[in-house]
Image 1 (cartoon, rainbow, N blue to C red):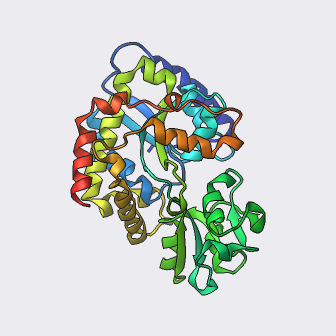
Image 2 (cartoon, one colour):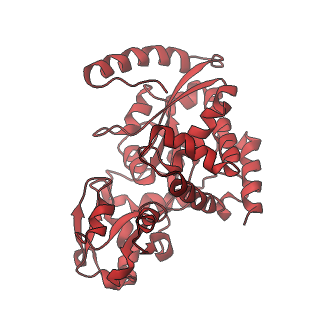
Length: 345
């Protein structure tokens, strides 16, 4: 992977790279046989990103004429802006970040849903005895500034609670697991297959309350690009998605091998634990939403997703503005992956 400069040097490199890449990737006609493509992911690399690192190591992206660089999120920056500006080309985003950016006028577009359902959950230690929403009354919940409180409303309502009945404790990303284990907070707002498995791996059995089980009808994570790149170089978008789908197909039967590529760039991660997490994610992929094509999107699901974030955004975009299925429609690999996953149900 190319070393990314920092501070002033990084800005100079990005400025120069932007000019070169814009000429190469936003030009008319098919891209060259060796496109330098930057993908920005939503967290520091872990199990959920194994297909990208595994696919790159297997040469799957290279066979599509793509020299892929995968970058972690940029602290203090809105990653979607990098993609929209043409500095970078594709991204994986949590749905809240994507909707906020799109509603603020950032010209990006979803080209495939990664996870069809929100993976967000409230996680507590079994020894706390907190196993139902009503037991959260008066308790301390970890919270990131970017989180959207409306996502919790269905769970709180099921327990006869309101937002005022819990205490939101702002935490640094990554510190919530230690804080819960140490008793500094009572519950984590996190991923059902993320912090929960990490805690149990460390000897702390947990209760998990997935928000989707209480009526939250959000999409989960999304793969997107800029409106400009989709318009000016649809061939590159198609090749990128095809390589991603092929990587997902390969990873299904080579999970530990794919995760090992993640460990190379995130050596603090545990191979077996991250492979377990990836297995759970592939179970999520077996959604009826993907019965015909993996990553398929609908107006109805986008409408429900947007509605959850309505109080956090300046105006609600129309569902049709959020996405396109046009590229997926042209890829047999989307059908192939759907069949493979449904056979495993």
